Length: 462
View (cartoon, rainbow, N blue to C red):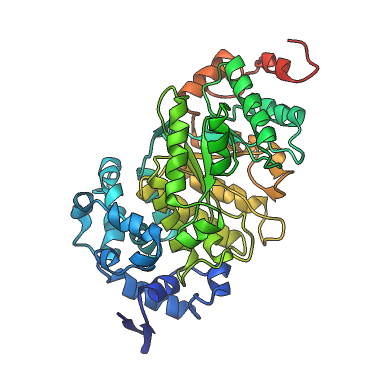
């Protein structure tokens, strides 16, 4: 089925829904690299006009990637909730955008709608939205998840404490953790990207996290971000695995490049839940995504990168995650060229994830060869804080010395809390006050409490 529209006396034709979606996307280097991008702003606007008039129902009948070829497509179609979709079923994509921005789309209404929206619908409507629309609607979408604390409550912002070390040195990692805790970071998760894939070394890091959390009764969760098969193996060995991590993408072929399929994710979730380590809930999956991952694996099927990113959230949603994190600028300028593209992508990802009912966070980041800097990250941090992002990263000095990219620092979360009045998750907030790390207002304590944490460092007396 083709699509045709005339703009300014020029007729524009789009061969199918995939082309229409790709040409309606804001400019980005990944779509240009794949040969999918529109050739002009006029063509972008023509595609958006045609997309605005498209019935939402179209996405239930015209698959961008064939049902028989892709298990992610099958997951999306087979789990679609027709009853949840019914209130918006008669709308076009443009009418859906107007409705989302209206007072009728309350937080409660959007929560009931989430299972009725497919990722392609979410991606399509996002292409018609300005940045302020993405912020406005995402702010109304509240997605709460629980393991040892409660994430995603209104007015709350959590932080993943990211204490990576280039040699997995325990003392270096521990020093970064204590530094981050002293700034009030770590309520989303204390999550280590290991330099080694040795099960023995990963087990040591898991025990380090478990012992620290238990010793100080910290209401948070630990995670070593290893492959799901490693987590399953370690659980079988009795290792203290809180969260099961995996990078995921929006096509079966891209997930295969990560060494996973949907059945393996199910096995990982069931293995994690068999541990019964959660105290407030059993949301224990931690997923990371990023625009461009399918293209980099040559597994994009001619679909634009932002739509494929939204499809990754359907994968995440199926496993009731605690955390989903778009690592927005990590893949590099081949996919998001500069600060403007990274900012737009971060807002799109957060909006699409939240609309689909996914507990979205964002690693607000860039690589050193991108046309971006920390001012761009400040802008995206401020916009996502306003949009109600569930969590961000806390990296020592904003510079990850193991992964070699730039993110947000322990200090940055203090800025956004001060400006927007955002609190930490309630259980962690109470712990920080008990430890005299923060005062009753949530600011760092003038008494410089938390000295007991230093006892955990090697060579320090308790």
